[in-house]
Figure 1: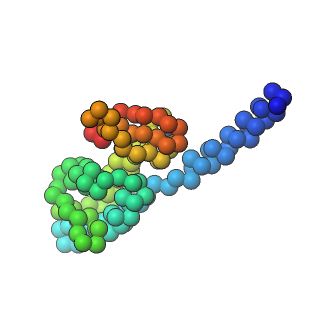
Figure 2: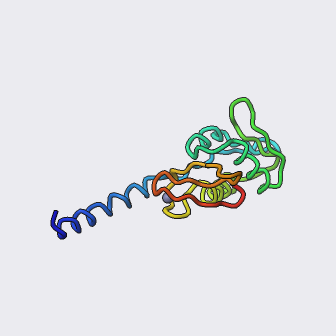
Figure 3: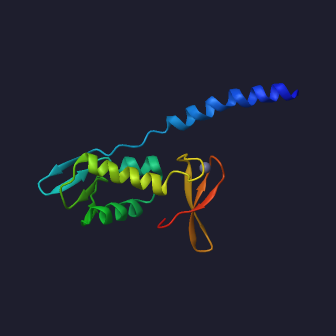
Length: 135
Ligand SMILES: [Zn+2]
């Protein structure tokens, strides 16, 4: 293949990659306040999208909101406190940026891998293995 052709290929390949990156939409928490509690009704669905352990996200949210939390039979998260949907979503986004998106390429296709007792973020898009504090 000629060098010029290779360059052409590179350039045409670039927008495709950018498009893919934009396709990831941050999952949005759907929550409402009931009495003194906040219920995140799609907690189970969010976990499926971000492919993370229930306990890890659960602990994070409980810690960040400084409340006791629980998960009910319908996979809904219940926080003992009143929080707006916006607050819940801000926390969820912080979590995703910190523990789900690859620090190298910002793609969400990551998995938690344990290597010699240390949990690391393995990116399936770019192959990077990153150390993330608190993973
Ligand atoms: Zn990556």
